[in-house]
Every structure is written in structure tokens, then in C-alpha cells.
Length: 91
Image (cartoon, rainbow, N blue to C red; front, side):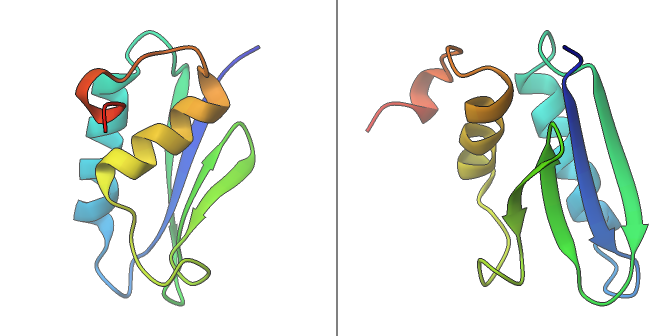
């Protein structure tokens, strides 16, 4: 199965830099697991992240942006549940 991550971001809010930074972090962490990462420009204050077509983050629903560690855990749980994230997983 091809693994996909999609980040939908608001161009009116100028969130391209945030979306590209999060993309870079995810591609670095999941270099062997992610087959495709897509940035989708949108409007209306949207910032959503999908993993394998499952929405895992919505800025509106979750009242803000994800911390990168939380986002990596959410992506991992969908695309590579057995992958260790090292210090991120340690409490």
C-alpha cells in the first residue's frame, strides 16, 4: 500500500512556510515510509493534515497547530505503527 501524507494550508493566512517546515520534518523522520507528500493550497483559515486519506489534524477542530512531536506521532500511528520515534516516544 502506498503511504500518503497531505497538508492542506491557507494561502490567505500565509501558512505555506509552516506547511513546508512540517513537510520537511515528516519527510526526514519517515524517509523510508512516506511514498508521497502533497501540499494543497486552500483558503478560509484551513490547516489540516491527512495520512492515508484519514484526517489526523484540523486547526479548527483542535484549536491550533500541532506541535511537531505530536504530529509525528499521529502520522506514525497511521503509516508505520511499529516505528520507534526515539526520544519523542520517551516520557
